[in-house]
Length: 143
Image (cartoon, rainbow, N blue to C red):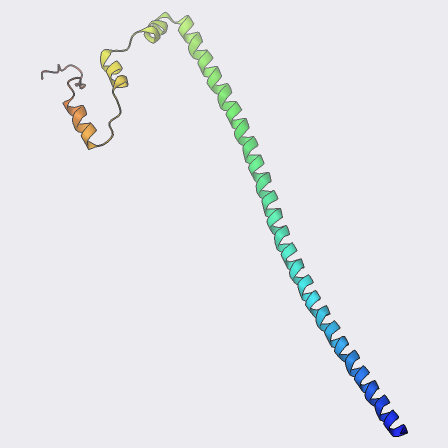
């Protein structure tokens, strides 16, 4: 009977040892899986941080370009304003220029500005047939 009890005890200890060993293996596998997930998450976090840094750099570059363009636009507006003021001064001071600027445009130039845009071959043919076509300077429409 002691042999049976000893065998049962040894069997129980062996079974308990085997169960603990299985639990240890399962815990190690979980730990390995969690470590892989952690490494993967760290890599993903690093990749996202690289993207975020690139986006911030791009935003800084775009803001710098926007500011430069705003400065350039301000300078161009100032230059245009100065030139317009110079033109107005010239027109006020110079009667010949004022008379020229106030003069009516020649009829041919007015017709050029009133002429519709030609789009396509059919419209071009029609514009060629138009009786109000423009002629070289010094020639009448009859020639």
